[in-house]
Length: 337
Image (tube, rainbow, N blue to C red):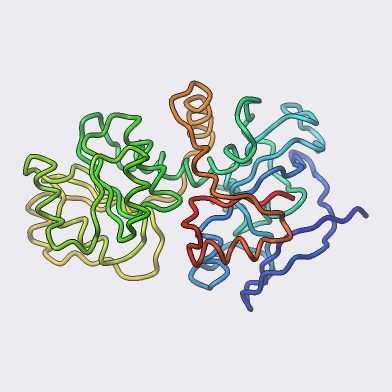
């Protein structure tokens, strides 16, 4: 049986190993993809450090990687929509019996030379879009897109805040600018991240430790506060700070993942102002991916600046370490088999 290289996480020990494993064979309704690019996400770091744990994984080991692009290598029985050689982006998850399974978490992902996908969990990647940019759209781009357009339902000219301008937050700034939010206020303790936010289109970039943050947000919004605030940091103090600058009927959208409690300090004020807290996870891939690819192809969006570096698959552990320590302040690192 043909072998391939894969970066596999042994969940009980949180050990990432590069292993030779059998190359998967596509079953009925499945497609085998030759991986060309796979993104390294902070969620991958959290899976390795134990902050996140797979809920639906069968067994104790999984190939990481939920941001994947490549070419069709083989198709299984009954698959007519795909043929070998087509360029594709893999969805970051699949719905099975009404339950969402996340690629690279609940089943094997794309930190490998080949990856399996259900035939319905692929989107065609236009020739004009490089594999590295295509790979990061599931999650790094589509998650903030879903948070903005679906959960947050942001409308043009609404004042919006983004907390945490990392791999997802910087794209949220770009996307908010593209749909006409105004002003777009970015909040991050890192000076590099704040500069990145301004370059991506933020109207204002504030330090979360600034004692005058509330005053600055009020000034930028004509005294009304933010119609929507997005937490991409997954940090409890961020959530309290964001609620403190929401406008009446404003909504806080929780995108960053954390297992810490959510608290609203002044519940009476929160209720009186009819504010809302909304949880968000992922995106509606069959809708979001074609939309985003069309916007990139049409020149409305460009994520080339988000590719902070490319490493061979054999250096997966190095990529994780660089992201964890923020060496070089990367937005997205790409693994190439």
